[in-house]
Amino acid sequence: QVQLVESGGGLVQPGGSLRLSCAASGFSLDYYDIGWFRQAPGKEREGVSYISSSDGSTLYADSVKGRFTISRDNAKNTVYLQMNSLKPEDTAVYYCATDLRGRGLVTLSRYEYDYWGQGTQVTVSS
Image (cartoon, rainbow, N blue to C red):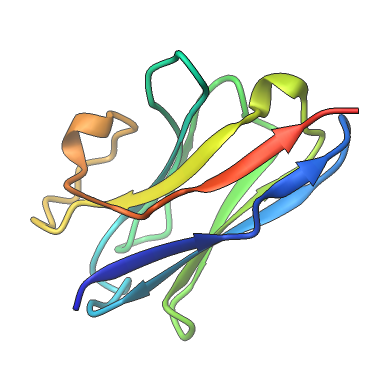
């Protein structure tokens, strides 16, 4: 059974850090790219970061560049999103997703991903 499971969300003060995990089962992340997305209340889901399965190349939204780092551990079949210097505007439900069609598109467009996890809540507040 194909599954993506996010974890690591929580409540953190501004300036703090969190590390999100996206654990895959039923398929190997050796062959599929992963994107991280987030959706705040009343807003559209937006792309945050992407990592390639083929060469490990990455992509970041301008709003998180320099603060967030995406990485993968293929042995654990898991992708991570390290989030530092968190701001209140980072508050959202964070999702990981993949394109099971395996097209290898380097994109943060949610329309190009066809399989999603259930999400994990991140709240940045004092």
